[in-house]
Image 1 (cartoon, rainbow, N blue to C red):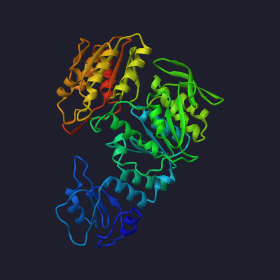
Image 2 (image 1 turned 45 degrees about the horizontal axis):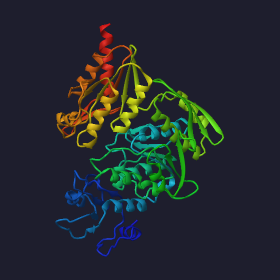
Image 3 (image 1 turned 90 degrees about the horizontal axis):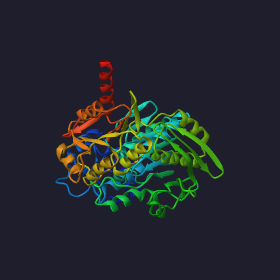
Image 4 (image 1 turned 60 degrees about the vertical axis):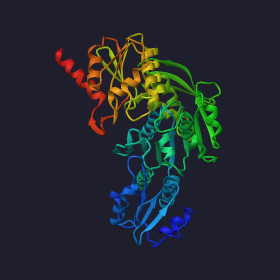
Length: 488
């Protein structure tokens, strides 16, 4: 494919083209450039790609796409100035990679909470059923026996196309991906041909990036409009979510609803829950399925309903999925239970107000014992939710230690001060060091107590002053258990 052909297909004027070269590939990282690659000099906030144009040219790029202004231009190089570089990148990828998203069953999972559990459940079930799906999300990229960690929930559009190209060549038929509001706004899924989009719920998050809650709400829901009104496509919505009317108004494709209300297409009835398992029935038209699962909490019932809605629409055997749930243990970092001498230790990723309420209200419902919590808030993130997180912890827990999460470039003390500034309670203490906070709450715990270590889930590092240090909540807990076992 030559550059003029690509520009013509993207409806971009190419009068300034001085060399109509064959395109080798498309890159946005100058370090990866090879001869005849197109280089997208994107200003990513932390890094301005325009600084690396000369490096890209030295490595063989013949076409530079940029936004704004650049200082100088070389002879025999194509320079194309565009108004929205990310949308142009999405257009180029769609054409250059020959619309790869049409060649796979593409399932997008978005929403404030529940994305990881829902997408991972679909992925794990398809693996269990003998397929080779791809999963892209918060926990990384998974395909067959390969796993790659990622910096973002929704990876760059170039990374997705690169993964797709390889995976499809190896027989992949499904791609399940978590789609964040930032990923949508940054055009990381623009022009993707989604077969199904699941919208779990709409709450409060990412106001460090979005201007306000309205901007977040509309950014998140744009994806719904992009699902085509075709027989084999659908949008799956939580009927019980308070934003259902708004979300459904944006959909032109078939809508499938799930929830606890009687008019949901897929609904749960006769629910019995405790700290160790959930039992309920799922009704789809005249069919009834009895579910027994180790995934606990009302929020997980909603996640399971979203998965069943998806599988039912795709004509998979729901009974087979129900059998799968009976042996399925947990999603890494989501309501993971560690039992030690009648103590129940919970590790969960909950870091938004809604997810924190979901976890702590479930624990409150399941036990009459004391609930102790360790939690912090991330640095360089939404400041407005810090006080909300602290107030929710105070409402539901009997004892709280506020600590560091991923402080990133912020002072951990400043973050915690933002959390506790409006509190009037004697329930909490502050211990900056996360390991010390966890071991302290465990040292002080009583038999039959529930201890919730929240915010980081299955993360294996802690970001302090821009450096990733190895750190795992679970490791700290297991080290504490081993140390206590040695004393006995």
